[in-house]
Length: 464
Length: 174
Image (tube, rainbow over all chains, first blue to last red):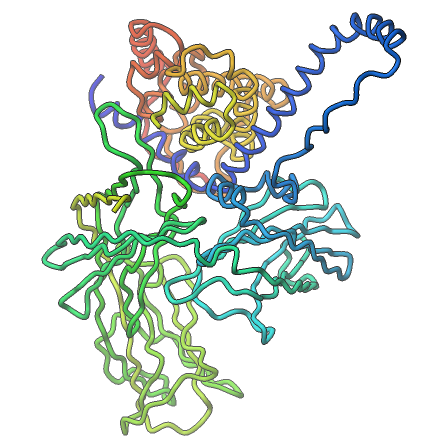
């Protein structure tokens, strides 16, 4: 067959590949765990059914034996029902991924079992699995009044002041297949460098019906306290101190942090130009164990990438993987095939907001509209997104200046809002209502990314 | 531990090893199921049922090297059962243009219909080769047939596919 046709067969499946990539790790994991659970039940049932045939025949003999033996010898202490971690409910156990299970087996699951109820909704915090850098809140939501309508639930973490915690973090969630009006879920929070799992927080969630944004919302809050002494000393650091040069810039891989719930590899890019940075190490897989010919080798995929943001410019600072804390590898290898660099450029646009016109501009963004409101003046800038752009390709700096050079901040600290229609991105900001010396100067930072194909291999000796 | 050792432990009843082994294949399993069923929840359900069946039958597997091909074989059989069930409950022509009125290639539609009409054995080989990028040796293990047979099926499948297809440009629906 000619190559062109072969290529078309391969391309035919591309659409399916894209669809298949949308399924989350959590959904796949839940399918596997549910499959194992069902397999166990089926095995037990099969054993029982096989056994029942024998039982019928044995029953007569047993009755006869009982008649002559009266009471048998005292039985040994009964077998413990359930697993050693029987404080973990089955539905929580089923939700646990392979990354969570070893930490739970080592006693890091802390039962909470506290609930709150309002307007026919109930939320129970079942427990928390935590180490110093990551925590997973297991919770159950119930719709007590109307089992027909679907409930939508948005979880949040509140600090002691009752406001949403402002610490930088990554969040994700997972859910078991909902059973009518009850749903078991978990909410994962990973903390970035300089922050750690809080001892106290309030787990809050907002219920609404059928994902209707206008539906009445019910908010429930459950205060949670966890014992940080359980994981206080459970962290190991493996020094790496190796570097790679990417187009003349040095990238240092400094250390690996091992905790019961995550593996973090710290990265320090050292770029000579302040307008460039490292955005991503693509396909950065962590291979476990020695690499030997013709031998299957497990690897971990990057779960999250952490960035340092300085003056609105981001630089990769860490790669987060699943935990290998409880495994005993002598060697692991970080391998990647590509890097993504990010380039920043600044531009300015001078606008007379009274006349709604642009005076001068070297910016790729254009003025879309100036809207005078009672309590603010809204400026809307428009940008035409390119394929090579990042998710948020352009950012408005958090202050602007008038013709005399006086600097002002935007109203309410709300700097920019983005709403995208096709390739058009609109940047919206609000100015305090006052007389400004026109024109006003707005500064924008735009970012574009560049893909660099270059392999990376970092061998990490775990037994130093 | 290598894959063989994991498989040996899994088939000996080690749940952790079984979980590790399946987890390493989970995306591959899902993608195979998705290629047959084209629906997220059905594909997840097929994976779940496959894992369940594999756990129940695992101890009967004599050769740990054959674990992954055996697992994929269970999954494909499960997908075929589901397709048969669908044919019993769904009208025959369920292929319709996208509701959103997006561009659909005639080539893709033709290929999709032609694949549906192929004998299952040819379809398995084509899907595993062009979707899963498997080698003929790997496909032979999955389908439990000699490599020569797989090669013949691939040629026959491609030949039949070409004869069932019409080639065209682009159509716009919507």
